[in-house]
Length: 129
Image (cartoon, rainbow, N blue to C red):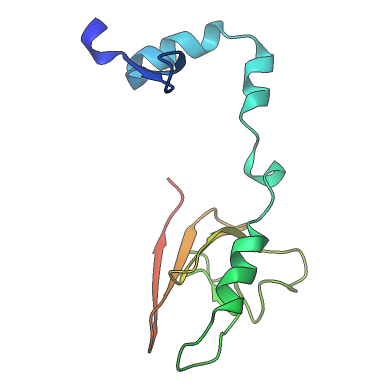
């Protein structure tokens, strides 16, 4: 088991994290105080990356207009504009200049990926695990 524990250090050799096998983590996490979970905010507490989305739009130069519609192939939820839809059913999880937008469906928890290429958008999704 000892060889499966890895220490992550900073440039000065100080340990900043420890990587342990999942089976060991399952046994250890019950012994941690409840405050330890406060260091891991829930998705709702983490702000959406709107700066990344603004950069994505700012540098948009593709051959087609940006379409803010999002739909979930797993539960059928769909909106014309994820930014203004009542109840905000799709939460932006990632946005980057490479054309990737990642959303989480509030209804079923699926992940929806929009991959914007020069001449088309490829859609991928993964159900909640």
